[in-house]
Length: 246
Image (cartoon, rainbow, N blue to C red; front, side, top):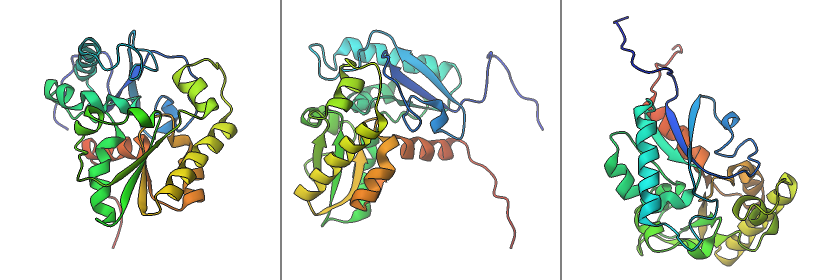
């Protein structure tokens, strides 16, 4: 093996994850739980950004974008090979932040929507389940390549108390995974009943992957989420030799 260079205090974390400054319990399968992955990840907290940053008074402001880019650059300097986030609404910053970095940035599973739309064909639409469906419009979609030509249907968990009180307002300090799973399944069933031409689902929110298997059992559709995307990017930036036989 050729000589290798040093210069950092730690190594081996290919994926960096920018997390909101919040205290909600994050179960396995959540982007914020490191046991969700078969490889090491490196977390960094976005100081002062609340869990409901995308819908509070300040919203996706330029000041918050600057905080986001600063922390992303710190992760890049710390040696990660790609960066993602713990909130799919960071889609708003995809264009500006990716321009500031020299490594791949994938802020949201919403990046998958144009690809999934082409996978399922023009006669089907992509169903998107979001933490806040009513907010999922405008620049949150445009910055990840979703425009009027992309057939989508959106629903959100705004009316689901367990999800909203745990992961958005954080009024509830504990989590009931069974109750939350039921809420996510209910939204998926509601969306697919309203739009029977949905050919696949994309979960915008980083808190939803733990419930993907239950949703798939209920609606029998392919489901793409943050964990799908993170695993895909990891396999792109860390290629391994094949070991087998013929």
